[in-house]
Length: 121
Image 1 (spheres, helix red, strand yellow):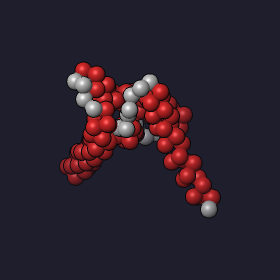
Image 2: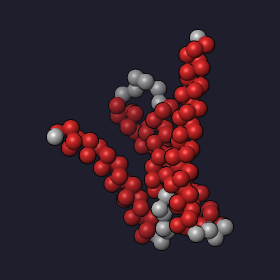
Image 3: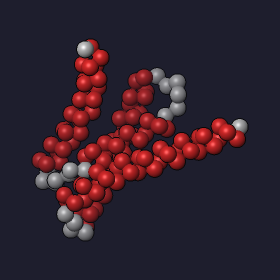
């Protein structure tokens, strides 16, 4: 039971932060339903951190990198909606599909490159 509560708190904290971002987005008048895709893109940074860093440094680097990657990925919504007059709902849906797809392609490419390096050494 304790393990269930621990995992609930871990996963809920991430989802609460994403929901808070959605609240700010809605308050500004932007319908951003692409928050899940932005969250996945922001989480990609953890793969590139070197091992052996102190926990506080890892947390700060991941949060900073996630914010920057999330802002860059959300720029797609802004450019599409403002510059090209696209529907915000459709762009958000596309971002929800594109985020996990980019993550899968990048992680598979990284793992394939690492496995080739390990076999050749």
